[in-house]
Length: 157
Image 1 (cartoon, rainbow, N blue to C red):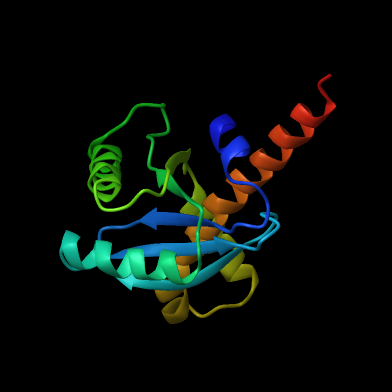
Image 2 (image 1 turned 45 degrees about the vertical axis):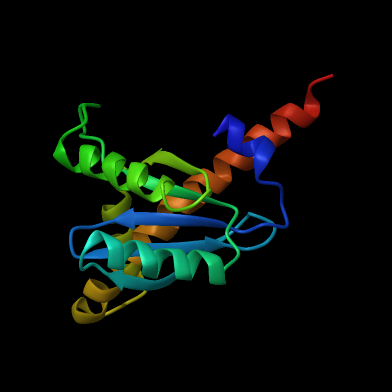
């Protein structure tokens, strides 16, 4: 995140991803990199098709970097889902020059679901929105961290 704070200056949106087995949740920040907004999910098929759809969406949004949720176990270890996410990023990095930054996504889906419930979104609609809501939650956490890093570095002599 420290590297990203220097690279991705405000004026360029950042993307957020929640990589599911059936969908890819997508969120994009505003130009000031303060707020994350969910975008429609990408239905997963094969990696090549997933990558093409994702790159189209990221290009359309003019994203400068991508924050991707890393599904770390509650005890801090990485299991098969984290390994799969790392492999997805390695494959994406071969196809584009966008920087990908991992973000601990523990409880992001739980938080996103609670938010959707508080907004009185029906169970059927929640199922279609949960991954993008989780992506927005992941991205918002990273945006908040970037703001803190920038404020701290601005105060240093």
